[in-house]
Image (cartoon, rainbow, N blue to C red; front, top):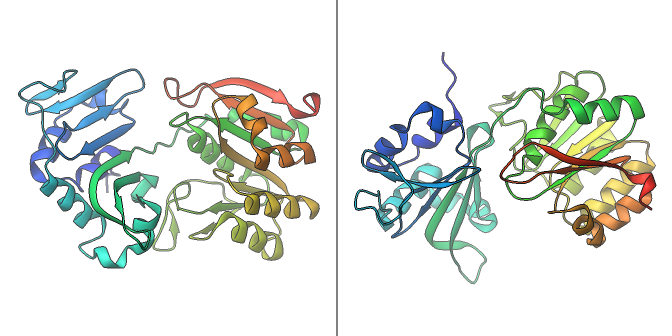
Length: 305
């Protein structure tokens, strides 16, 4: 069976009139697309690292006002949401609270609309499909640091900078030579389906998904005897506390954090506590959305504090 690409998977969730234009895009252009953005009453947009294009009835245009641009209707948004929820929207309260669905292959679909009094998204007006890609070998530089220095690392970058992509490949490399637990809260990294881990995250890697980072870290330390714990998007004091607890048990951590610069990362209280504690031996800064996955700078953290 031929494996579907993330682009093709997204196409399966689109109504016919948008799908036909989406799937008619040339393969050379598909490979560079990072997002499909659908907003009610506006043109269907493809986001590239260096440009924004709009779907038309016969190709792509840079002009959102082109008369042939495919305009997204409220009925299109409703049809996609029905498809995302497998026509059972009332069973997807968690996704509607978080504002995100995660599809096969780790594709994230962010939702916009109105939150009701119960904190659940209703009257959905926008959908952003973020394409996930496996890039084998992109974690080699960071893996060399870990292997040579027997330490943990934190990977920092902005939106669409490739943090998760590098973390996934790094997990594959470390998890092929050491005991690893991957705390995959939204199942975006390992992409487990039907009890099968779809992405290669290392032969010795245990995966915990569908739980908070805090719970996953604590559970891993107690029951899975990891040498390393991997997790994505450190953001809360609870995350920090769990990591510090795991560090006290001799576990090393590889994680990502959102930030446009080292200075921005250092200013965050959650990260400052971790950096000062010596959890991470190195910090890796990525270049940004225009160069996803490209390393801009690596700092040895002992020299910074």
